[in-house]
Image (cartoon, rainbow, N blue to C red; front, side, top):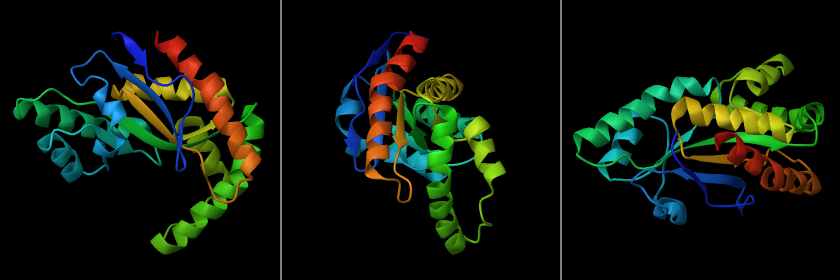
Length: 202
């Protein structure tokens, strides 16, 4: 897959995001990691084309469903960059997650707060109330990175390999989770998840 460089040895909190930043040996260089404001966020064809047109790295907001369904956007970004005669800039994924000492603990702590937040947003957008079975499905196979460090690391590695991304941002805040639990999640993300991702990717 090429040499991987980890830019941060621990999670860095910016707002409600913790970043696992690693860049492959591509022409983008480290400057894409240093200037976060340059990343184009979104997941529509128009956003992808704008990112390529303005020579910007691209961050995909993958907040539900199988991350694999975003592969067409990655391919469109590659084609658009090639057509413009430019190197492909770094591509990242932004998803929701929560890390605890065990899978069961992470789900039990995260589920009620995530449901409250998801249902509140859902009433504004016409979504049905979230059921626990759907939550578990997203944690097992979708875009919720909820679990023990080993579980979350394996899911991150899977999306890196599937989409060819070079950056993963985890949105770790959801609803009214107690501050100490959020701090523990950040600690585990930085001290265990990121090193595991580094080791697996090699």
